Image 1 (spheres, rainbow, N blue to C red):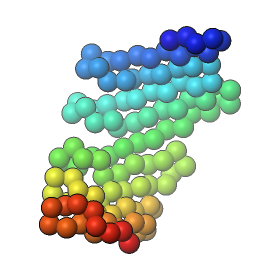
Image 2 (cartoon, rainbow, N blue to C red):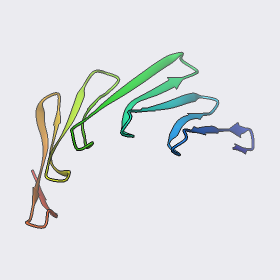
Image 3 (spheres, rainbow, N blue to C red):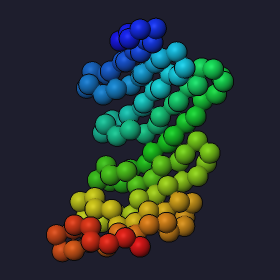
Length: 110
């Protein structure tokens, strides 16, 4: 895709998932496991010659439960049932809690 002097390109896998996006400043890549979960993201900053890598983990229901940021900090999602989020941890510290009603609708945050 080109707009004026800016050019962007996108690549997809056979399943239609975005696997690469490129412009003059960066190249982004996404990597998936056999179940189709996004397991890694590479952000290549062309100006600086630096690459930032995100890594993601999933439970047996293929729900994302953790991400490791490029700086090494770990974000974890606490879920129940079919994926309802009830909390968020960063580096093992409780950052956010969700209160839900019997229909799993959010009714409060701590």
